Length: 457
Ligand SMILES: *Cc1c(COP(=O)(O)O)cnc(C)c1O
Image: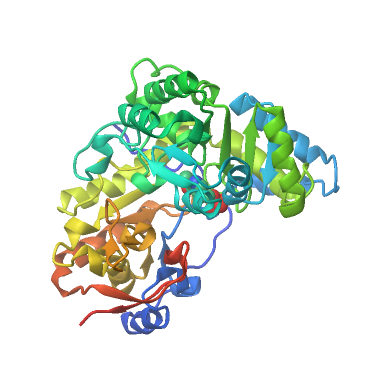
């Protein structure tokens, strides 16, 4: 097979910033071992997130100039709405400034004390918005999704039997919503199969529970369905996406992911009554319903990006480029979540740094080591992000200790990725020198964004 090449050429470039190891040692201390507190100008390869970091196309930049900034009834909104209606089939479209703004609105209405929102895995902002409303978020991930080293085609699937059991024990009337996250960002960027969505939908219908899709990476998930699920080999991405959305009653999306936009998000749904309630909150928190916290130019960039992302040459390159990094690491014996995810490679920090107990945050320690060695920034998805405390103040760890190397869309070339793999392999060889961390300061919610840590000597 021939090399799968980047399906674009580069028209505009940005500098990246070289630093010495000694400088990085200082920067890391000044940032309290938290990558979110680093200045991005002190980062060489930034794999912190694929959110809002995509390179926009010349077509999107042209769309930005055509954005109509009218307060109400802008043609940019109608183009945005039409595209989302075409992709999802959902008639009611509400723009928001990010995915979490859509979540905040939705869960302010559907959440509340005594309620459960059930999911394959809720993303951190989704969970935080559910908990902030007083409701409880429940992750019911399939069994194979819980073992990083064991490959399976659809490790993002929801455990349908566990879902039925949860309903029987807690009552369908206490479950106002089921959310399926595609792909499963917090669980290794692993896809969900069409069959699983159908099965979950059947349980939802039987129990009168609405189903929403957290659609941030719907195109990447659709590509996995095309290449891994029987019967979809010859179906277009657009048709697969349409079928996927057809099982849902609504969706939330962050346009900072698969829409290649630097900002934006939306809610879409069928239910008029729910949409009215959402719009009522929208006007007090986001803006008028035809712009919802976005400029007209953002609506244009999103609309164009949503159409671009379904290009199969792009998706083949995208999924292959993640797999390329995963293969290099696997060949060197580095423990990673198998198989590679759609937008990121996830290092298995529990295995990588088996000498560091989970109470000393091995994922965060690994994040620091990769920055120090090579100026690479990435993020822990483990007990710093999802850990809780029991009444005695002991850590209740997360199910997995992962480090996510999220690859921004259309941004880095193969040589950047080769460099990343070289640094990780180097750190893996010297892993015994890495020390655990303790938290010296933390916030109540989403603590990983601002927590301060220090090494344990
Ligand atoms: C990024 C993300 C969100 C939140 O979107 P923001 O635009 O960052 O607010 C929600 N769910 C998933 C799966 C995400 O990846």
